[in-house]
Image 1 (cartoon, rainbow, N blue to C red):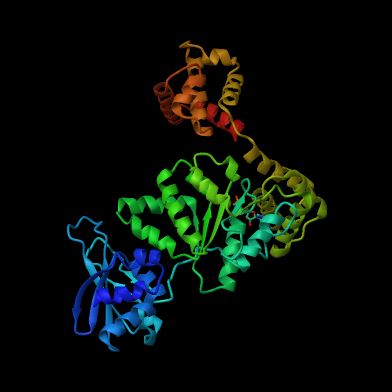
Image 2 (image 1 turned 90 degrees about the vertical axis):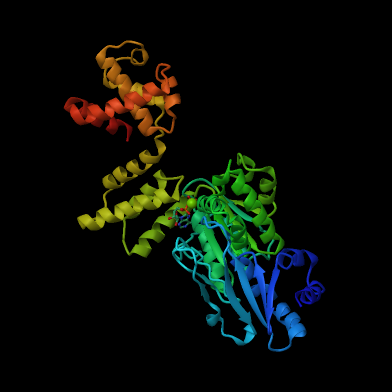
Length: 467
Ligand code: ADP
Ligand code: MG
């Protein structure tokens, strides 16, 4: 019976689709008018139901008559340590006459370790949480010269997902310039216009975690199938994939599948594709297929309008000279721009008085300082030496004089705390010591900080200079 069905199906679909979706199916048994078939995963099942339910029904009816039934058996991946793969049955049949809700069949696992039974969604109703933030929409993504291209490309994609040449759409730009906001806005807009489409927003980091998890659990194929079911896939911060060849590989396959099927892919990155490092060439070349749109530093007018919009939405008034001051001094990061104005709003409502220029200066200074200052190991050595009134060469010297050793250890401690340098690299920069010496220094400082008041004061004084 199944072979006859297959012949019929084969004549009615593309060979590639047949190979992918029908060859892996195993007929299991035939009882009365019910044919049981085994499929590799629940995603596979969903895909069949989504795309081929009519075809299956017609072919089966031809063989077994009107009362034919189809039972899916999902072969669960054998991932939780039990020897035998276990199976679950999902009855299926004249689906078109059954309301979709009733098709939500819960599969209870036979394995106690699998705590939550998962839900098989109904036919044309795959339930995937979009993970979109409705607060990041187009309406509050203010337009300016710095983002006009990216914004309108995003709009075009939202109007016709998968139907423009902007596929993939890659949005790139520095931190805090609105990549995540714009990516969500596109997704939110698509959900609004096409509620039936499956949209998924995910950070590249989370995507990677999921992938690693799936490899561990032996469910890599399910992972891939899952992503292949999505209509609009938004991956944030793809630069995170650099150097992760396994994840890049799986993403490459997912990307190709989606792209070939006219599904929309939206990516963000902190760099243009040409500047991305440790990303495979074949993936980079895919990124360039569509459109790469840059979010640039906002110009003065845009900064002003972002600030005014924020104030307006919060129902707060603020003198123009204050707004102007903030806009003039925070230039390269919209997140900081917002942070500064939020801080000012908070202060003004707290003190119930107008914000003064003096206060604005303090707040802005804090924001600019926090991000601008990248403390280097050289800088740390200089500050520590100055503090103890010695020169850097003395601090680095081999001497075992107590106060010099302490200064050196403090420099190492702060280098560990305020830079991203490795222990080995800190050691080599502070008088050619090895990593064990640095580790020892950090521990000593930690101990002394708890037991020695004078030493505690050194740490506090110096910490202020670095933060
Ligand atoms: P990125 O992902 O590039 O680091 P985000 O998307 O997180 O930046 O944006 C940082 C903050 O700036 C967010 O709160 C976002 O709402 C805001 N923002 C960015 N661009 C705009 C814009 N054009 N209009 C209004 N707010 C913006
Ligand atoms: Mg972001």
